[in-house]
Length: 107
Image (cartoon, rainbow, N blue to C red):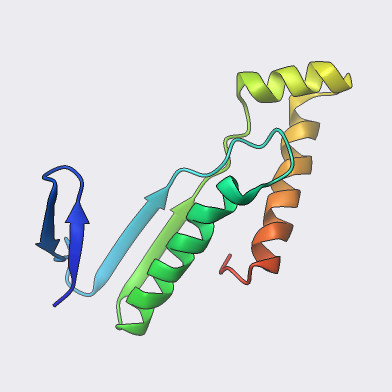
């Protein structure tokens, strides 16, 4: 039996998937306005480990994470560099993806 801490109830509870044998995980990713750092990478490494664990146990896992590609920080960075938000977002999305590959995290 797997137990997981439920922050809603503040209790350690038995893990029961909504659909038997399947698991879906959605995680908010970083806002991409600067180079990735350990704070951006910690959730990636953590959830990569969680996904691999549940796959090892035989679950079908759907894992989704996003990049926030428009935000005041991105707009300000674009103004500072005299470029567009799209250029900033694409640059730092690629930088994050390179970092994730170096950490050997699943895409």
